Length: 337
Image 1 (cartoon, rainbow, N blue to C red):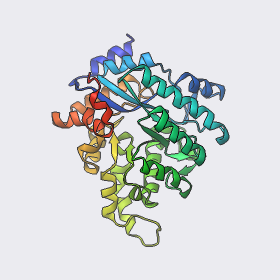
Image 2: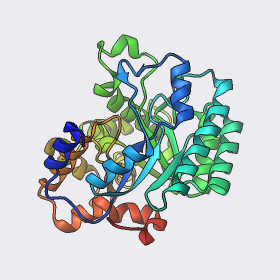
Image 3: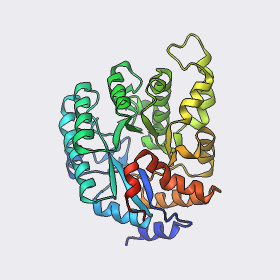
């Protein structure tokens, strides 16, 4: 065991032996790691090192942190580093690798499929294969697609199909198109990731995409990002008649956001957690680790902070597992520790 792992294991206290479901864990299958290397990407999103990943390392971390099942997905930059016409091939290989991982480790993994956006026809085809052949648990979309945000009319067919399937959509931040101008010379996860998550949610609210597709189970990462701090301002602008389209009312903004789901990756600190609890009920809060981009020590610290939050044991169990089982019923029959 490495020194980091020893420290991470020691820091985890007040653990929940209830078989955590981690809805925000990433994987870098060999085909994807090779594609990043071929493109010369040793770092991504303004300087974040590309982490090493293996199924065995993931399982070892999960056992130490009492994570029974992890929903894996590609992190930023997804396949956006390739020209749009070259993305479908890599997406297909990544989705096959994710399905193979789930099959090889019964009960330990679930999978959110990647789509070759912005190609709508190819993305719809990939979605059909993902759900009907590979048996995935949902779909992941980055917060912007080459600088276009998710409420754009061009993406309407994707949301219509997700709504028709009553699918789970996991949102994940990526760098904005203007990152070099606004990133302050620091990696995008420091500031631009939470801001881009908030930006795309505002776009989805003001385009009325969320309101008109209520059957999509949307998971928002990182405790709602900047939403808890900005939600009153976002809602207040719904009353300005010169903005069209827009939410029907301030109340609609709060009501819509309250029915989304939120993971607590990097967000169990008392300040962001308090804001999230005012935004959404406990039933909508899920556990997330963001491993391996968040080192295991950070995962353990987040778990400890959650355990020390003053929440009841019942609420901690709901966040750790029960809320996720309500979204993914197949997990109910799987091992819990």
